[in-house]
Amino acid sequence: KQEVTQIPAALSVPEGENLVLNCSFTDSAIYNLQWFRQDPGKGLTSLLLIQSSQREQTSGRLNASLDKSSGRSTLYIAASQPGDSATYLCAVRPGETSGSRLTFGEGTQLTVNP
Amino acid sequence: DAGVTQSPTHLIKTRGQHVTLRCSPISGHKSVSWYQQVLGQGPQFIFQYYEKEERGRGNFPDRFSARQFPNYSSELNVNALLLGDSALYLCASSSSYATEAFFGQGTRLTVV
Image (cartoon, rainbow over all chains, first blue to last red; front, side):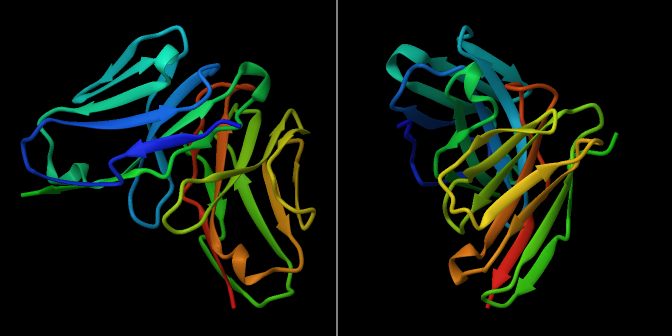
């Protein structure tokens, strides 16, 4: 059974700092991995999708890397801003035949202080 | 283009009642998935429908059921509600079977 773990559970940083969020998964046979952002009481916003054949993806100040063999992904946020404050979730899709059955971690709650 | 839309946004029900939640996917998307998110936890997979057929089911009791209509919208039904069913119910749409998932804003269900 696939298990996804995110460390740390919570993180508080001053504005402008670069930071890294970690995601690990137990079964390396994944099809792709997706990072999401969730504001309190809201739905999920897709940030980045990395296919199993890729090493990293970039969007603006965000960079996500994937090391499938070691079961790890990181989300790098450059020059953090107060508006980045949210919970960040990673989710893995076990295989193409598993469709959209995403397995989520419990998230990292990020607070960026002005 | 409209994103994934869910209705209602909030709902309060009494134990033992039945509830229907609705989801309209992004135009052109044929896959709809449902997730339950309890406060403080990550979402848990409930169902996936693709081309109007059930393609996956998570570890949820038979009180949970769903269907997808010819226009690809979907309903999630929960019978005999329990207090533990209180959660944020999220709908996700994808253009195809295993492509990037886009989520709606969710329906907050409170069972009293």
